[in-house]
Length: 88
Image (cartoon, rainbow, N blue to C red; front, side, top):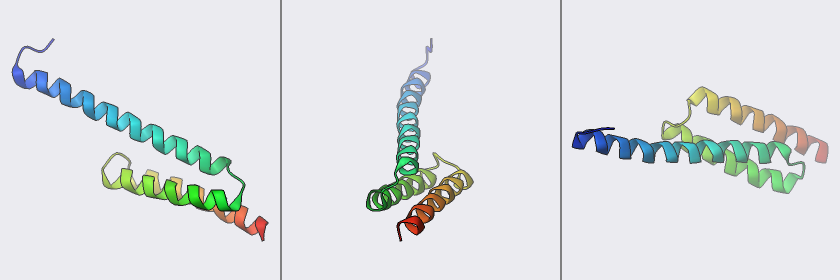
């Protein structure tokens, strides 16, 4: 257990950051899974925009590496293009 005041504060702040990071990771995984599972064009377009926004926000905040986000966005875009080309 920490004895110094600064060490105690560090424990508190790292716990807060851990919770935020976990929440963000969970949100990213959920929205990517939902988007890939969707086969309806209208619903997929809404989910796609939401997923891209969340991935970009995670990247800009430093919670997600830019190449990791780019890979996920590419995967989602391929799925969107596949579904929309079939729907035509």
